[in-house]
Amino acid sequence: MLQAFTHAACLAHDTGPGHAERPERLRAVLEALERAHPDLDWQQAPRASRGQLLRVHEEPLLHAVLDSHPHERVMLDPDTVLSPASAEAALRAAGAGVAAVDAVLSGRTRRAFCAVRPPGHHATASTAMGFCLFNNVAVAARHALDAHGLERVAIADFDVHHGNGTQAIFANDARVRFVSSHQWPLYPDTGAHNETGCGNIFNVPLPPGTGGAAFLAAWEDELLPFLDAFRPQLLLISAGFDGHRRDPLAGLQLDAEDYARLTAHLVALADRHCGGRVVSLLEGGYDLQALAESCVAHVDALRS
Image 1 (cartoon, helix red, strand yellow):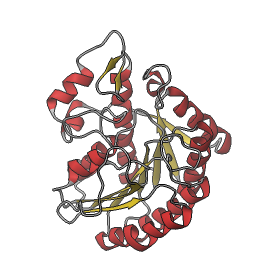
Image 2 (tube, rainbow, N blue to C red):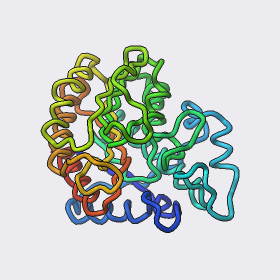
Image 3 (cartoon, rainbow, N blue to C red):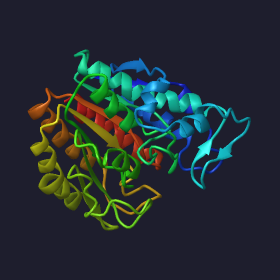
Image 4 (cartoon, rainbow, N blue to C red):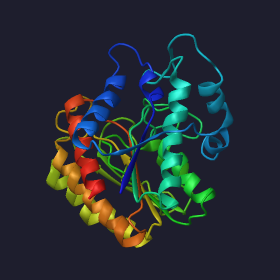
């Protein structure tokens, strides 16, 4: 049983000509999922509330994204764009994670996938960066902790870029375990093995050229056992598919089947510890064909 969350506002976030994080990414995902899973239970993502965002982010960031009302595109950094429609997209992207957590923890579904943009895992408490305005997975995790009273939430991040924002937000919060595999060196130049937070962070940097066997071994031998020992009550996934061999922004050599195999491992972990409860949120992936194929493989495994 799986629900999928999205909103048309996420397509209106206008990053401009030639930007890698473009509306066509989400359109490719939605079209591929509709072809592969015509019976998928789609839900409209609500807006995250200001209070839900403030569990994670500082007021000046909310003001910059939500209250500035730009009339044209504004560059918040060399990669990160705020357009006239971006505030609504960011609210819906974060709200999707909140609604998905509510759906999973209420028993309406066992698993959920949030097909949204902008992505989130680079955004810190105070700074939008790396294509990300709000940290969607962090907002979802804090909602699970503070609104639902959970004591142990795990976040698994397999995007090719390290989720520096998620790590920074939870580095001193032992209620959350954050694990990440990512290419090293690569933007944002964080995620070294010795970055361990309060004992709740585990990073496995992977060299350029790493293929599926070594990628899966990192999870099977190191990251999944670290999560198993935590016995999470909810598993969140930062699902970035830019480690695919076709992706233009990085140099790992993964394919859709590698993502399917890892997702199956993550589902099995959730089955062992938290009644199968998984919420996955879309992060990166910039080759449209690779992104679409990988998302379908991921959702296939989530539905199994």
